[in-house]
Length: 193
Image (cartoon, rainbow, N blue to C red; front, side, top):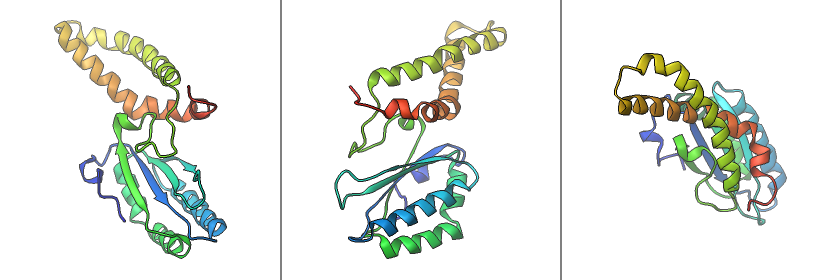
């Protein structure tokens, strides 16, 4: 099954997170994991690939979840249409129990959590709060000093509008992808209470 849900609505320059769900055929787990490893290795060689996480099933026979990110829909589509990916899909057909399920996400929804909640636990709220705060505080100070000389003559509500738009854009496209990757282990380690 090819991605159908949000891909058409996403701008080609928007960073994307792709969640692929696959299940191995009974008795083919080792071969399936080798194919999955090879696929992710080749995907990481493509321009704009930002990283991958593999979430193994909680129960035997359940789905593997492969979560990978690209810096733009354009670069993801280059991978999706590549000959090397087609070769891996043929290998998956030999070891996979069913067709893949794909979900494409972008923007704020990908900062910390994955959809569906099946065997994927978002980070603890205090961890998310702390990472967002240590990202927003210095960025807000920087934007204040950088933008005030240019926006000082505008009404306050326009200053706030421009500053907040700049802040949210930087958080979504640059800061949070970096921070989520940098603090991934801490965000997802231990019991999330």
